[in-house]
Image (cartoon, rainbow, N blue to C red; front, side, top):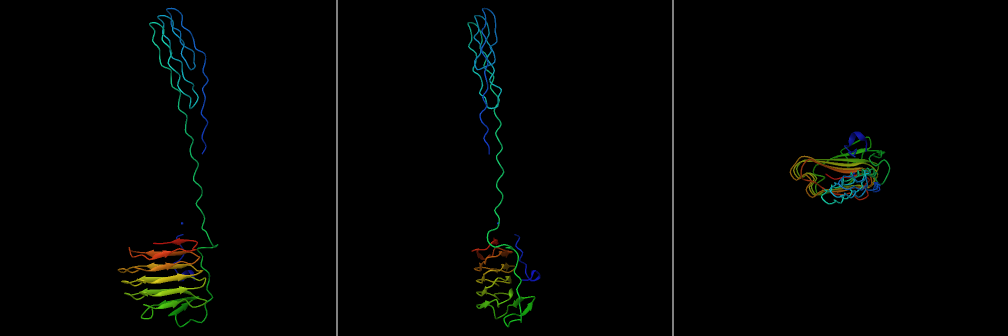
Length: 242
């Protein structure tokens, strides 16, 4: 359908670091009545009588474990070893890219309809678009978009398109605009290969019980209230319910 005639356009649905290992040094020994500090490593030196043994330090590598406390000699005091610094967790990878639209190419682009002599079912025709201004001919009736045309149906009035059916059997755009109390309640809009749109605007229960059956191209329902149609996406390459 010509772009000027339709609102369609579809606002168009780690690494884990290895554990670090710290290397320990040898432990020192304390003499009688003296204090000797243990070497850097996993265990502290052993203190002699009256001496004080200091605990060895843990490995400094990321993720290492702390050293044990030194053993106290007679009268001495054992100091605990120093814990190693915890490793830094790696950052998770970024999520994958969003999936692309499935289905046909140029999903959101309409196919130009050839048009021709304006059929009787149309109130008027414009650039291959059959415009139907619904009156008494739409409610409780079945309509079919004429061959070679895109269709735009205006349902403006209370119950004006109630329980009607519109079928668009070709690859051209099809759009129904509803305004009024129960204007499109119980309506069914069915599309084939073209873009498809059902607009539920103002009015009480404007689209209660309505059905939108999408075709293969972009398909959407637009709603200004809680009165919303049931949307069957089918094979639509871009389906957008209210």
